[in-house]
Structure formats: C-alpha cells, structure tokens
Length: 248
Image (cartoon, rainbow, N blue to C red; front, side, top):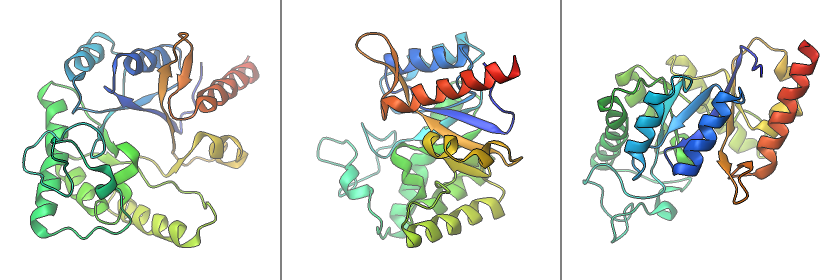
C-alpha cells in the first residue's frame, strides 16, 4: 500500500485498549497509516510499550494528551476539572471559554509534561503532540501545548483547516494555526478529516504536508473499523487501493 510522501495518516488512540492496539498495528502492517498517537494514562500502557518495542513498523509516534477520559497522571488537579472519583470532568474542560488561573495553567502544563515523560521514561521516541477530542486547540490550552512542545522539541497537530460554515470558528483556527507555524511547532501544513481530504482532489496534489486522522479498531465480528466513524476507514482503504491500481 502506498501513502503519499506529503501525507501523514495518523491513527489516534494507541493505548486505549487491546483491540485498538491490534487494529493500529494491523494498519501499519498493511500500509494504511504512517503515524500514530499514544494515550499514556490508561491501564494498557505497559502492553502498548511492549507492542511498540516488538514492532518497529510502528513509527512517527506522538503523545495523545488525554484530559478527557480516565484519570490524570499527576495528582495536583482539582475540581471542577476532576470529579470526586479522580477522573477527568470532560464537561468542565471541553468549553470554548475557560479562564485558567496561573496556578491552573502550571498544573495543566505539569500534566501534559507528565503524560509525555511517561512515554519517554519507557524509551519511546516521540515526534509530536495532539489530544483526545482536540482539546489542545481550545483557547485556554493551545498556548500551554505550545510551551510544552517547545520544551520537548515536539510538533503539534494543527486545528482542522477547512471552513465548516462557521466563519468565526474558521478564523480562530487560522489564528492558532498561524501561531503554531510561526513557532515552527506544526506537525503538518494542514489538518483535514479523511472525508474532506478525499473530496478535495487539489489537496492530494499539493506539496504541502497534510495530516489526516483515523481511529482504527476491530468490531465484534473481527472486521477493521473506525471506532469514531465506521465509514472513514473503509473510504480511506478504498482510496489507497485506487491509488495502488493507478501505480500498477
């Protein structure tokens, strides 16, 4: 299978569970992806480290910073961002407007760093950062991710670059993406959904580096799927097969 040299097909959620891990490895083995992002705060951490070390085909590994599910790596976060059971309170974190105090900014920076350090301490080479539910693109978080990325010399996923019809949202994304690019922290030149990439042919012929996102998993019948949108991976593989036929 052939992926264009200017394309990063990233599998999110490595480390989420065993099924996802097996699906992501399968996708690397079959040439469907060439990049992935590792969630380091799950109970599957050790299993995932072993998977990476036993399979050098898994490359371009980022950390998928997780402020959304499970528990943080650090112990300093407090309500409203953490529930009484110690798990993330996504409804309090995933807001367009959150005003963080200076102390809260330091605590979130510490959590981002700790999730990265967990991978580094296992001798996993890390290339980039992104986040569960794209929380790194929120107004209260994007500059924190920039600071941490610069500290660790990592790249960061851009906000999605197409216009969904909401002009204010589009302008905001342009603004923060320009900040990532100005600081030379951008993992790609554009970040698109698979559907947007496939229906926009001129993107496939540009020299810009484009990142797309997939969520590989196996369904209950053992078939490869995308646990976010089942059609996404089907459409992507169909596109790759067409590309391969043209090459032949």
